[in-house]
Each structure stands twice: as C-alpha cells, then as structure tokens.
Length: 326
Image 1 (spheres, rainbow, N blue to C red):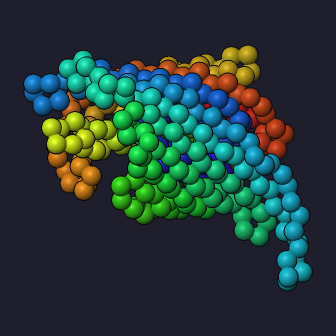
Image 2 (cartoon, rainbow, N blue to C red; image 1 turned 180 degrees about the vertical axis):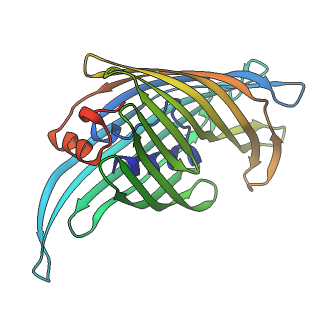
C-alpha cells in the first residue's frame, strides 16, 4: 500500500508540481512526518548565449486522519474485515529560476497543494489505494488569478511473498489540459541489503541498507514545474505559463538519527531538460533545451509519530524492516 501511495504522490509531483529533491521511500506513508527540503541546480547554457538555473526550498507534510480496523457484514451474509489508513498530504515549495544569474520572476514561483490518500485492505476487495488533491503554482503577480491543478486516481496492489509487491492503476490529472495516465509499480527485496522500487514510467530507485541507521539510494526520476507569471507590455499586462521538465539521476546518502530524524544528502546530474513558455491561449511561444548540469539536494525529516497499526502494515507487507525503511 505504501508503494501505491508513492505512485500517486510521485505522479502528482512529476506531472504538475515540483518534485521533491530527495528519493521516495516505500514506508513513509505509515509514519506521519514533516520534511524540510532544498535543492540547487548549477546554471548551464540555455541557448548558447544565456544560462538557466533553478533552485527549490520548501516543506512536505503527512498528516494522519484515520487508522482503524473495521468489521463489516454484507447483504450476502458474509463477514469482511477491513483495515483503512487515511492521510492528508500538504506541500509548500518556493521555486526560483534564474537567467544569467538574475531571478526571473523576481520572487520566483510558490506552490501550494493539499491531497488526501486512503489505503484500504480487506478480505473481500484486497488492497486498494484511492487519492485526490489540488493546488497551484504561481508567481506573486498571478497569485490572486491562479490556474489551479487537480488530480485523482486509484490503484490495485498485489503481494507475491513477503518481499515482493506490484501494483497497477491510473490517474486523471489536470494542469492546463486533462491527462489520463496508466501507471505500474513494483517493489522487490533482493537479499538482506538491497531493495529495488520502480514507478514506471516516472521513477526508479535502488536502496542499499548498510546499517540500521545508514542507507544509500541510487535513483532516477522525472521532475519539473509549471508556473504562471506576468509580462508587462506597453498595451497591457500579459499572463504567461512557464513549463520546465528534467530527468534527474543521482545518489542519496541517508542517516537515521535519534529514532525520529532522517537526514538526506543527494547529488547527481539533470538531463533531457526542456523549458517552454505559453500564452493565455496555450500557444507555445518559446522552447529551449538547457544543457546537462549537476545538482545537489538535502532534506531533514522529522517523524512525528508511529502507530502500531502503521508498523504492523509495514512489516506484514515487507515494505520496511523493523518498521522503517528510510
């Protein structure tokens, strides 16, 4: 179920709002937490005459809404035991693009988003996850005339033994246009130290657990942003949209401290980059392919609580040894 959560969350992040700089983990949904994060991409050539760079800072929080086991009785006189886990996901991110070292927009973009994920495991319907959310990414000038995005979807998960899970589903997302996207995920433990997770076609992660308090991730994933800004002309103030996409490949070192803190440092390169601007009629105005460039990122995650139900879910599904797999 945690893998299903990451499917929906990462799809949301990868298609319509800035993705987290740090890797995704399959057990994080079960542990409510607050994450502070930042990343910096080294400026590189935009079109041979200018340089483009981007940085992000922000927080990401998981807030528990419901965790319980329910006993039901159907019209066919059959009992059904169901466990449900519902969380709210809140995010704020400050994105700052630069052109030749100058901020543009001057105050960057601000992303606000809120979503709800419901995981359900029952004897009758097995494992499902449902979710939905909405948000916006805007500059100061367009903050009060936003173009919101929203998403919603469902996924089915299957368990093949203690260390293997796979899932499939679909998500409907809107950001300037409506998209229907089928998705597939897999989570596989390899030996005592390795775990491979994939959220196709968006992200792949291989985790090496060196000790109980230290592990390393090798990752690749799609990320970007789509934000509104304003252009002042002699005739009027024109609204524009800036869309940015990239593929990031890197390595993240993660240290778990004092049972409640996780510190992560990440470094790698961004490639297959694309930067476009559109007018209010959604017509393409400019299109660039910034050069491949290095990036660095860091995060500090505070685990606010650990419920017995959450720990039991994680252990039984093989998503994290000892209740946590950061």
